[in-house]
Length: 273
Image (cartoon, rainbow, N blue to C red; front, side, top):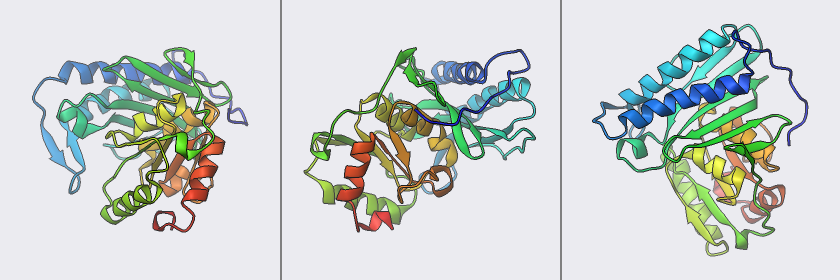
């Protein structure tokens, strides 16, 4: 579990911050399921970076609740301008992680709501509305899936592990990630590329995969997952082994032992530069 407990004020309706985050994720997830089989309006923010009208509608539901319950907290959300707060706390929101999966009805996507203090996540919620799986964590209090405690992998070597990663939208770095995986293969059990970094990190927290890594993500892609992994007894570090995942955008997440194995095995590889 993570150290240094931060006292978080109650919301306007006297709810705990984690309760507010869970409710926000549920509301957005409900909308995603209502619209799952319907036609979506799709646009692109980059070559392959897709956004739908459902992303925007789900974000609206989340932000409305967060603003109502914590009007003095900042907000950093994928589809909206950042909102500065006066409290030192910032909500970090991804209303739909795995947009392409969702648009194509591939059943692997999630909603993420995190709360950060001094640029470190202290609350994380990752909600898979299709499977009705709610992953939650609060600093110093453990990580849970639907109320049951979870923990990161107990394996002791990469040879025992299922490794998960995502390609992202930076082509040269994606090529380096592929080269890294090729350099490690076949000294692992399997590789997974599932189209949702949020679920990849949640699965690393609960042991469904043994290690997740990514070369460059935005804060909303990883904030919730970072605290989930850390509270599940794991490490979530940047490519240099430090804790500045939100600033650098890179993340390696697993148990302390497997993170060290990963760093040892990838020493000198281009991806680490």
